[in-house]
Amino acid sequence: MAVNPLTESLNARLAETFSALESMTADMARARAELSEATRVARSSDRAVEATVGPQGQLLDVRFLDGRYRSMSSTELAASVLEAVSQARDAMARQVVSTMAPFTEPLPGMEGVEGMDIDWAELFGPGVVESGESGMRKGSARLRDEIDEDGEE
Image 1: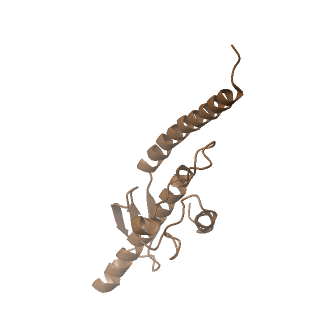
Image 2: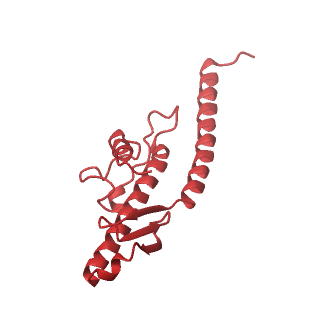
């Protein structure tokens, strides 16, 4: 019995797609594990406060550095705490966006099917992406450039 070339081509594309899906599933599990252990640390611009946040932006630690808080007013100290926490949360959000970006792209062999759109500004606030970019695909080059250029590790 002769094999139909169309069936052979379809089977090859399906095999390629399933292989890509299995690979993406494994990559997603690694990304989730990496992010579940991630933390970000930031200091206020006056260097008086250091904040550490977890993978969901939850505050894990606040440190008051060099006793500077003793000479600060309550308003100044509050502003320093908020600044450090905000910077750490923004850094964590950028890490999440960077880590998850590849999972929004279409699978190979599925050219007609678009990847997932995520509104990052809605999820993390406007500090993560610039205005006008909130509907952008995670894998966009402009967001990756911003992440690469932010100077944070």
